[in-house]
Image (cartoon, rainbow, N blue to C red; front, side, top):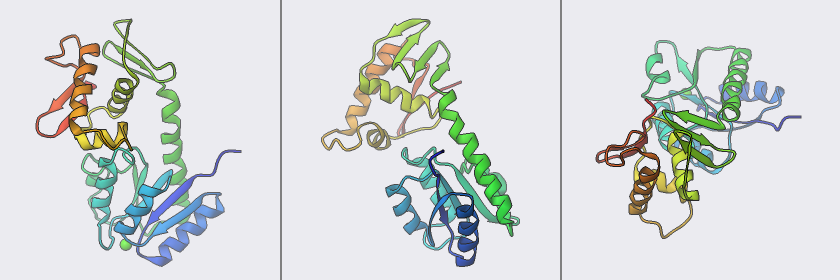
Length: 232
Ligand code: CA
């Protein structure tokens, strides 16, 4: 049997929370919730959830802002989010770059429809990592199973940290991360790492994977902000 999935609902309307929880639990999901954005953020950061159902209209931190915060945090950036919206709210924004929700559902909705959406989004996101054991871009091949990288078919030597850094950025192509976000993701609890360490490792990584490290093709700098992997 598959491990149960953990769903987190952020919604201040108790009736909706109850209805959605009831229907999800009936389908074998484990459900937790919070009535406002701030409480939700605390719980989501601490826990391990598979999907977030997020209402757009919330007290303290608005749904849109919460979605943005989750997307910008490396720990939650890949967490699937389904938005609950009222009719007429800006759907393009919700699904687009600005917020990056995975799906949305308009109120009033049928619980069955929502459960179906939850399953569909989970299927989509759960299947991805298996297919992505190998990341191929340009003349680079990154194999996450064997921890090897080749460029033009030639093995590239990387330290464990450089490999982690490369995979972290390559899995999130196009997304820009500042030094603190990268530190958080790669070095986590090591207290004595300075933001400058990120620059040092980026430089070493470039010297190994870039044809011309001074004009990087893959690991690019966004001046004043941070770094990103250019997948184009
Ligand atoms: Ca609400």
